[in-house]
Length: 46
Length: 171
Image (cartoon, rainbow over the protein chains, first blue to last red):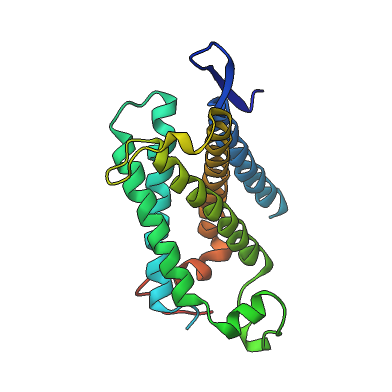
């Protein structure tokens, strides 16, 4: 899993550009997983 | 009354602005093509303005002393649960990071009224500024999803009602 996104400057050197776009789906699905885990926990606890 | 009308208005204005910023910030990166930059910086400026408004309308010497534990809350004032205080603290830190880096990024983007000053930082430094902006945005997205879910739960319905404008406060 990459957390950084790199590009190249005018001299061909690798430079940091920002976050890796892969992180968007990771953060979305981790939050979704926590929500589903809590939903299941509440259903079992009933 | 649990929340003042001014605080309810702030909360919903903040919610709307944050949602628009999440969508305009991340959807283009996922391949949804639209003119996002103007919307993003306009609502980014809105976020900064309503945050300053919130700070001005909700802090005074007494409250600040309580926040920094220099003075203890009266029992009747202890209306917020630990998770509520926690989410407020998390959003405070994240919004300060995203607003701070957003102001800097305005000098490296085509924002109306701001002349481009890319020479302020090196490419490596700009990279870190964009990284902090992005990672704070991702945490805001995740915590917003959790905040919405937990406040829609039946056991928290009274808390949600207390934040609605015309509902009577039960708690």
